[in-house]
Length: 152
Image (cartoon, rainbow, N blue to C red; front, side, top):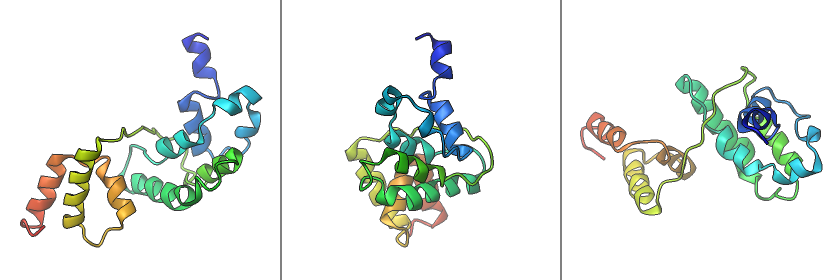
């Protein structure tokens, strides 16, 4: 398959995210049997939560994916269409967005970041700390600590 053909494929991540953003609930039904086997609803969960844009929109997607999709996602592992339908509910219906994938950090680094975030934001839920730890930098943490007057 050429690059041009691949970009037209329904399994091209840009096309999948566009279907998620436009709440195309029939998208999964359009797949061939082979495409259904290749389709990864887990990638929809990982990519769907992250968008660039204004902070309020970013927060919307993270919260919506976490509350509407992530909670029962693996319980419904044998129902990929239902997982897809759950993913489409994360979109606020504001058109196509630029989604990106956040690569997981090494556990050692991740735990250190999580521990610092727990001290800085003791009222924050563990799930939110985990999400935040994927994109916060050491520079951000130092700034948070400065803002709090090193109370953390």
